[in-house]
Image 1: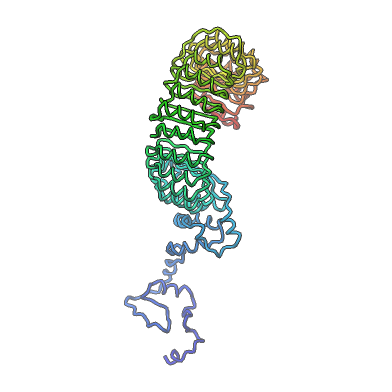
Image 2: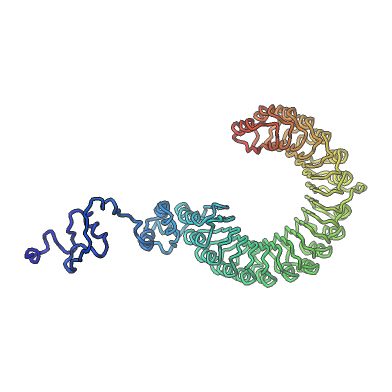
Length: 635
């Protein structure tokens, strides 16, 4: 005791020095809690109430591990890591570490890092793209993306479609992206029910370089999200909102005020968006907005009139399902003289578009080149004629389910107007009746493409008129026309002086081998794509003619035709034929005998469709897959 009292500090006992030579022993005592303490002068010895068994097994049970540290300590450690690569490596240790690392913002990284690390954090390229769909869309994956992409150039584009039902994307995952990916420029979110304003506001606060935002079926967000985007992302150029039921005029007004570089807007099925939001947006972004799509909105003639007045930079305009817009709205839009740069106009299911409105649009849009009308029931031949007379720059016209338009309107448009039309498409127009017209003396030398689909009244007489009046046709698509026969199509073939390049006569059930043989002889030197899908009267004779005459053909579809192994042999034996794509789907007369022939053609094939070819067994399909490794095979 006297030795202890007279201790000078140089022996085995000293304040702040362990009394155990073996550090493990000290660990044993210190791990027992506050009841057992190591020796130190200022403290009294603690009383031990329970016996202590000094056993070597205790060494094995007491393991020193960083996992014992609380999240606060790990957070402090992680934010002091040297760089992105080190943080990425730590994230792969456990889910806990990954989640902690994903919560670290750029400004929370410790400033003790080197200057090069700071450069990496500030100058992120953002060239990487990531896409998550369905079950892969989880918070864990988003956290991994947020941590992992920082060391590889930074995340630039992120697309999330659908959601994992059990562990779907929530605000936590979106916040991880916001904190870890400040370089994000493009974000697309589709059908995520667990996302709310909190997640998107975090994106707005952290990802200030955002340029493109696409939100579809995100019902949990409101105007608060758009206001945050407007206040923090001045570089926004593209905005798409689809079925976001809680977004209204306030959000659009904020976007219009702050996002001066906005070039593209698409608004679909947002019930709270009205005239006030559209008017504010158009009047604020009139100088930059070039593309505008309005689908199924509760807007009236006011919005359409504003477009006609303020849309001075718009080149692409699409209007769909605007039930409250009347004839007056389209008339004012045309006379607003603001759509001088409009080149592409698409109108679908807008019953206010009548002959008067179409004529006004033609006069008010002098540079309009492509006009597509779908389900415009009140448009008639008179309106079409008046429009064509005014729209002197028109190059492409598509009419779909415009039942009051007939051959008279189409032909009068060509005969009485100085047309520059290059492409004409007619689809599901029930007003057509196959009338005979006297062939005019003048010709239309501009029309290159003719597409007619499911127009039951379109027959040989109409086809012959186009052949005689439009000799420069090169692309002809006639789909589902039962009134077209060999006689009418043969006359078209003989009239096309420029040479047919792309021909689609699928489901024209009355066309036979005669047409195919004649076409291959006359246009075999120019034909590149031929679709005979569903032409049940086409047989091996057509294949022989194609193999002998079509020098440039690279795509052939003979699905549902009466092709046998002999037809495949004719194609395979053609020395000059180098098909890239061949479809024989539903050709039940093709069997395993064609296997070596298909392998022979495989040198040039990149696509082969043999679905529903019941004569080809599974082993042959497997051999084709193994041998034609450069060809995509559908079986």
